[in-house]
Image 1 (cartoon, rainbow, N blue to C red):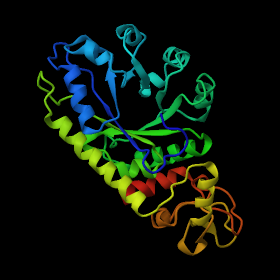
Image 2 (tube, rainbow, N blue to C red):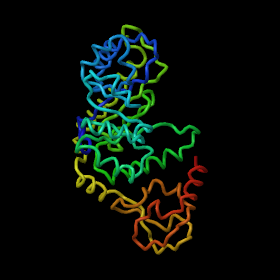
Image 3 (spheres, rainbow, N blue to C red):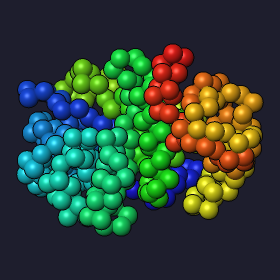
Image 4 (cartoon, rainbow, N blue to C red):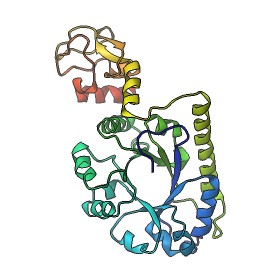
Length: 317
């Protein structure tokens, strides 16, 4: 499990296997061996994976994370050598599963998309230090509107500022974006295999393994480029503070009164990066301020009326 911020060479790739059909003929042992050959570090498996062919060989390998969906998940794999737990958005809201996973003191990948700071405070106190990884599910919004995804990323960045915990990023394998994952500070990226992917009974390579191989090559290329450019990634809160001090953010160029509408000449870009990114300014022109802003004060989303931000984002999309 990662601790702190990711460092060059430490980016891990996991695979999330969907629940298998009841009468699946997939040989789990052979399938896991094929995934290992691609370079995948760990596999997140559903409870019913251990009821099919090859299950006995697989549970002894100790390189998988259990997808916990109910208390029955633990009973289904009692003899397995589990390396950790994964809780999706539903599991993360289940107090019973929180209690059960925290009591076992193994790495737990907790999906935080639907959690706020208060919920996380209540959860964090239950886990032993170094055992909790925040997990973010990246996916396309159902209606094609990018507004929700934009606001979700803002929420993620806010939580990242509040909690100095390792981050994992999960998305469908065929749309996984390693660049975005690592830019957000993730030390682990997880590719979710599509439930429609059919594997032969010998665990043949198939479409899923081809996608995994391509994705791991992308990660390796990013890692190699990062190292060859002699980039030193931030590894501590102080490093991130220093990076922020060199980045530009929007600040008020003059006194701005409550109710005024944002115009380009009302703000300037200068470090440190406490305000909104300058690249977003054109999308926010026309938003109303809900507070007075002093000259030189950072202009943040919290100073703008949320409804006007949403309307402009929808209009620009």
